[in-house]
Length: 99
Image 1: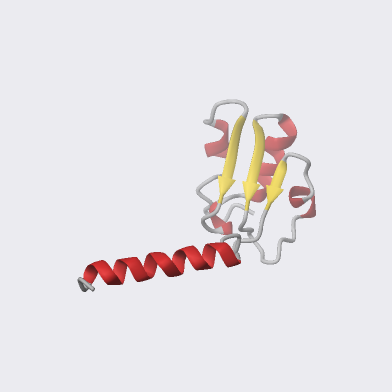
Image 2: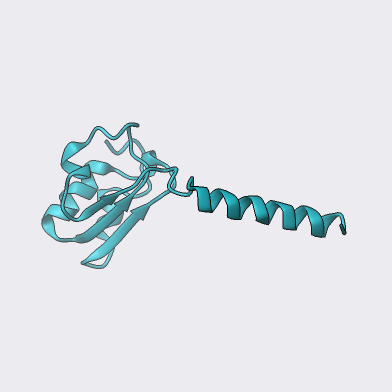
């Protein structure tokens, strides 16, 4: 599943034992099969994912692994987060136009 992934078996092998990998960028940046193998061997202690090679996630062995935490990529799409970003936008515009 590599396809040019930035985090693949080779890059994982160069990491310290027991690392935690978090991918919130793009699913294609992480070779899911290599991550699963590294989790099984203990090379990777845990993983946090909110993006996947295929959407919706297809790799059941990975997303159901006990050391993997999966969240939706829209995790910031809560009422509270939307209010905060709305206020930040107002603040930026107010400063920019000296209002």
